[in-house]
Image (cartoon, rainbow, N blue to C red):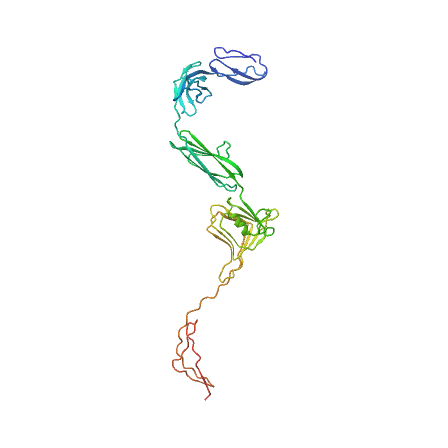
Length: 427
């Protein structure tokens, strides 16, 4: 370590410095120190290093608390610097080594409003008495925060519902920390309502509101995120008394759909084996049906399907909107219609939007029934009068009495002559 003193121009020098890296530091009274790292090589005659020392001075003053007899522990700092001090019981503070120039001093104390003062140091070594300040009691009423959640499933977003009110001002910021790790995940100047998809498990969420005077209120809610309910159906390995688990699947598709209808996690999941199910199905709630499953591993292989051999209408889906629902790898077939004039329908969709999806599904509608007989025609008109017949060789025909005509016959458009002729012996 080597030291030297500058001349009146601030110049200094070190002679005979060996090659290497060095830290050159400078200090002076009423100045902030400075340092610089340099590399010295013997091939260079002189290495120049410039250090600038900042002149400093001292601020003193009083920062007192409203309606208090002990003014200790008020923090006073010079804005945009690292200069900070604390008051004694009388409220007096001393700020040393403050860079020369104009500054704003800020005094802060818990439950009191901040106070500020302005002061200037003109030259190194100056000591300036700052005008005293009084910190007023913070009479701001803190805001009120309320929070709740809607939804608790890992396969759909959870809605976080936060509200705040302020009796003597307005809320200027809403914040959510979804997992209470100290990191703000959501912030808004206008709303505390948002949604977020979360992984399965228990967690705590923290909601904070801030009013226009900087006061905050925090509330915490605990929630548990569940996996979506999953049920299993297998016509080949299930049973009528099954509970819908992997080890004890339901026997019919109807059993599975009845179970998922009351699931709290929307949409629930239904895995169905690659068997044939001789039943019709009706769905009016969100559900995801995955067909073509191997009932021993509950995995799906490409080209595998669940076959639904239904009635005249095999599958009816109604009222699906907003929350997703879908069928995947299901072969849906309707039966032949037998009622005269009836149709065969593989899939019937009622009052549903684009939340309903079908993936890798097949649809087969079989024969409709023939139409039945139509109604009877209207009653025919009376027949006209008989006419004189022609004479034929070999026999004589007698003209019928005047006024004989045909009788009424249902289903005809006109009357038909009655058979009223007589055959006479040949004369």
